[in-house]
Length: 212
Image (cartoon, rainbow, N blue to C red; front, side, top):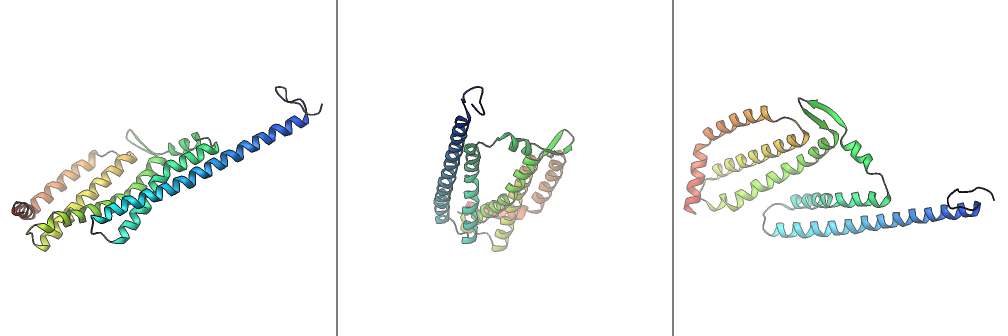
């Protein structure tokens, strides 16, 4: 009878037939994965375009920022699409989990893993960009309507941007797994110093809001 399969096959011809079935199933999975990727890419671009279009109507930011924002949103929306793409291909996702949780360094009781480091680096630059955007919007929406001097407005905007960036940095460090106890002491001292040094700016800001 030739080559036999002890469970289902009766001969060499049946073995070739089952191999053809497996090949057809593999091609089917590839088609589903490709369609999922293309459809996800189209939807991601459309949703990103709509979100940016809505934000652009209410903002005075330059076009370069919104081009970056549209690309960043598309990248974020594509992450689950890529996950589904590999899932439909039948890729063993435990490999990605092993790579993601690979330990790099240990600080006290915290372990810095490769995946958390990659995620933190991916969020750092967008976080700084969004901090600049929010600080600029704060200046345009609130400070521009007050009677605060131009120099004071610039200083307050800079302080807002600084605090937002510091918040992003602390958030990124917490994702990595670095203990923030030492940074909180330094941050508290820095906040007290900035608060004492910017009393006049805050007074001018509050006065401008009252006049509004």
